[in-house]
Length: 274
Image (cartoon, rainbow, N blue to C red; front, side):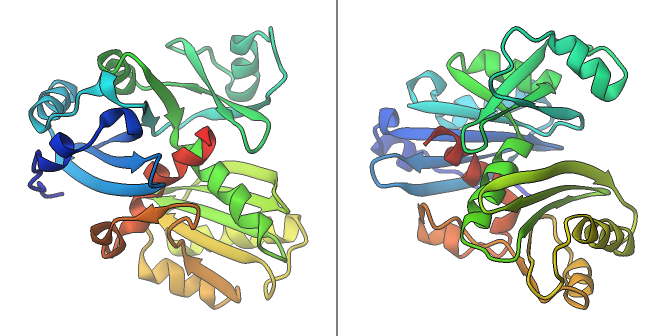
């Protein structure tokens, strides 16, 4: 991905205590968004190239991101392994739960992230770079990307009849979420090689939950090839690329982005803190 020129004028003109910042590391750099609590608006979204975590921190300093001054900082971790727990599971041996799900002990301390809208916790092993970034932003909260996906899916299902399925599509992997009337029914990750593989998982899930192909609503975000979208539309009536969350406003430059659905985790993590 290419560098985007970032000016410091915006950061110099705002009161950081009114803003939250969401940061996601990605291969070859990082991206971040700024959200104004007063205006309920995402005012900025930037994508920056960086070689390693030290380069990430260096460029954040150069941009002028003074982490500790922001109202809230979210660091999003792209976790491969994660599991959901009831929010009231206090005093549970997390390592035992993790071993039960994945048959192994975590290589690093496990982290918890609340999904307020679901009454659920996400248990995950944070990546080394995300933990390093959290140390830089001492008041940051660490979340797996899946938490933002679940929050968005739950919200989408509240205004949708026939069931809701959300697909966060990435290279060779997708996270699939099923919700109905604001209740989460499934959250899982699947590896896939071709769009046909992805279709298989979707259709099998529809059958499992007795969703009708002409009634269920399927939304995709992340890296969504047109071939995948068109294939799904052959079998499911209501298929679309996710639109900006209507809870918030967006600056004009964000609205104009053709690929804004690739940044939905940055937008939707805010739901978890409302």
